[in-house]
Image (cartoon, rainbow, N blue to C red; front, side, top):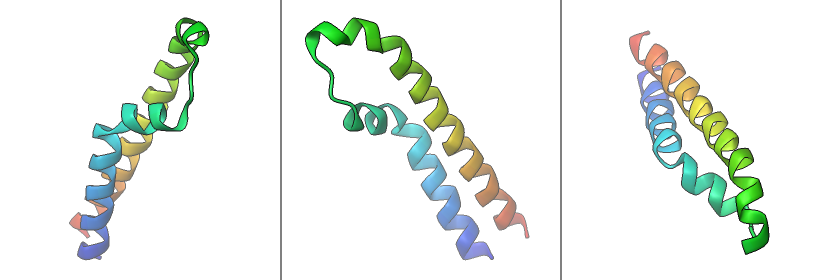
Length: 65
């Protein structure tokens, strides 16, 4: 269980730190749409960071088992 926990913990940390790159890499924006989409993209970045925190927490719990 410790190996699974370590892997999940590492994946969660990576997702959390690179959330903005993950979201921006999947989104293609034109110059005209950039201002309008910034609010939606910031929400998407927050959602990806929260997913990273959840995966990190689950990995930490597996490390404790």
